[in-house]
Image 1: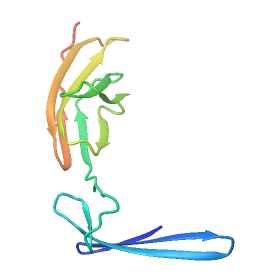
Image 2: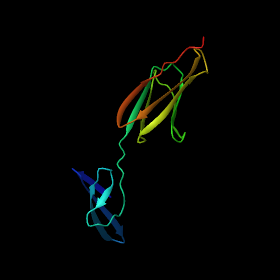
Image 3: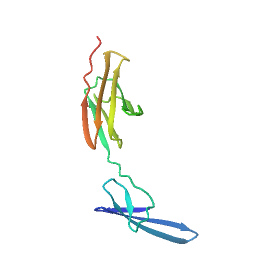
Image 4: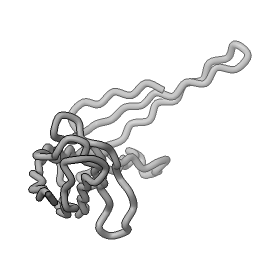
Length: 135
């Protein structure tokens, strides 16, 4: 499949090669504001959703801190990792409210769990974790 996009017009060429025969079909659609492909000619073959990523940086983390990001509405785990040089970077197509949990309890310096939340939107965002030492 070859896809090109110019302005709001999206052109896809589908090719199928069997036993030397070559069939190609061209589908022309117009991108709606909602991100759906509406086929010119009235027949909708498929719906296209354009995912616009959101990125989140959680900064200010103590070395060795484990971070979990979950959806606020379903509790689904979106991301889990250990900090790298004081922060984590996360990119997703999910847009909405998320919960952030940062825990540092495996070795000194020990920290109390830190909880935060943010509303992911298109583009880049940053949150600073204010971890409190238990010592």
